[in-house]
Amino acid sequence: MHRNLPRQYYFIEKFNKKILENQSTETAIIYRNYSKNINKPEILKIREFCKKNKLKIFLSNNFKLALKLNLDGAYIPSFNNSFNHLSFNIKKNFIILGSAHSLKEIRMKELQKVDAIFLSSIFKKNKNYLGLFKFLNLKSLSTKDIIALGGISQNNKKKLNMINICGFAGISYFK
Image (cartoon, rainbow, N blue to C red):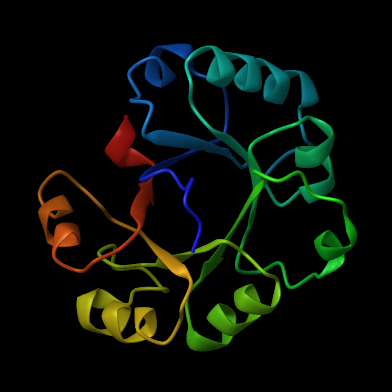
């Protein structure tokens, strides 16, 4: 169990100062952009903004760059099954997050030594839809901190308080 985990995670694809200024210090920013090449100057801009506003910043799917840029951590998506990150020297407070949609993926993230697992989709009815009961069943099969992901809104956020999770993540919730 990791003591310094944020309670809220906001996935972004680009820097938008107006939206980021409205985030509480409980919110961590995860920069993920799978559609184009990594924009290092943009990541540095986000990092400086986050440090100034006391927000944690994570980089998705590029562990080496997250370490190099001295970010707070890295996010390993469910499709990334690599163990390369285990060979790096990691600073003490560096947080490793991972996502999963099934028991097989949960076990993979445990082998990758993540600090917490994003489990999805709890509410959003997409191809990875779990629903509340399957979510709880999968959650009970891991000792890692679990973070809910998928379709979280102001209306269903209250349900999250009843299921004893570490936090939640989203995109539209934070806009």
